[in-house]
Length: 509
Image 1 (cartoon, rainbow, N blue to C red):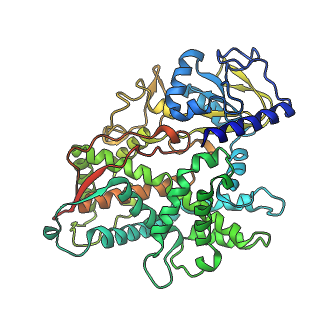
Image 2 (image 1 turned 90 degrees about the vertical axis):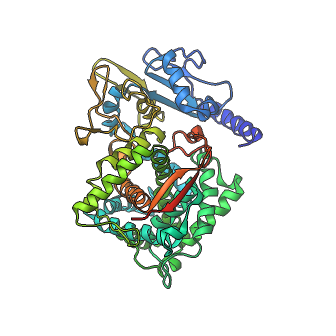
Image 3 (image 1 turned 30 degrees about the vertical axis):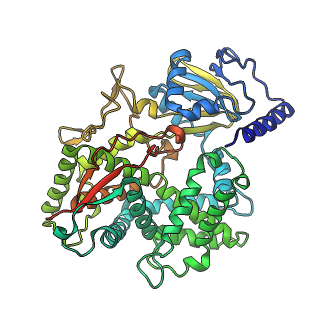
């Protein structure tokens, strides 16, 4: 965003704030208390912007430094909002169970429609639609994961076979070079699209996939500004890309696709029940699901692949686990044949799951937010409570516990077996000698946890299984270590600051 635009937004917000007459007793950078029962308030000198620029540069460091000064609870003025951060993980359960006074949907129901281009679901013209659309996420969980897993495996195998494996014997292939993030993006984006939305009428793959991915990337690059509610009309290229993607999901196009998931079929049925919705409104809902399905899954796939390729011993251990599970099922793997891994087999891959959990711990930087529905006293633990004002945001920032050296020894280091103990999943993590209820929170918390998390983890497992089974993998000689880009902190999984060059060749098995 340009400095001029920031200034204009700041001036506009200052005028609005003055007209509305909102006041706090004290607004000093020193963090003095506004009222005796309120948390310290940390503000900036730029109207509206507050501490947004400092927070955006490196949220983890920003919160870590202010925690040293102000303790475990403090309020920060960020882009016109007052966000009270709860930094003590032992207070998380009390925050998460506050359902009536702290609400997540107020924020998401306001931001999502403007970001993705559809009318708000909480609308008297659309009675019951919000509830029914939320219920459709059950079709991504439980017994419904079986058919989705089979479909995903087939689509991943299709993309791998046609784009990377081919029919030539491995001895004739040799080493190929690629960019790791681009590799993950191309495979996961298309396989996910085919699994959820289906295939075109007369082909196994959508011919426009390359252009769709390019438009998605242009939109996603500006996503932080859209979530900050910068009007999309000020971002012309972004709006053009969004419009093109929405048009791809217009009903007359989707009606020609086959093998569409039950999840999308149900959403199509629901949207068709409301005459007030235009075709473009319905299409925008499907575009929103595309973003939710791949925007975080792709970078998790990248980080898991990157950490495993960077740690050959871990890679070999996970590969052997996959081969052992196949062998127990009576399958002798061969790189000349397509392989299928069912959900029950994926569930047995505990070292693979631990490696993915470790990748999530190192790369996730989401903010769990709740909006105060009224002025009230928020109980933090048995002894403490703080005053909260209506409209303020209560925020949990799990990256602070993910990187806590007391909870995770050498937290900056990737340990593929960190979440395994005595051959089973490890769930006991401690701080100050006390067991933590919440120790890994990449998908949110409570009733607002990502409803597609089981589907996403299954997809990532399948991608990594095929990758490790079919290919030898190495980083290119001289390739330097990449780091996470903190500019997207608060929005989910961090992306790498730079792509990574790697080599791969078909294994002889």
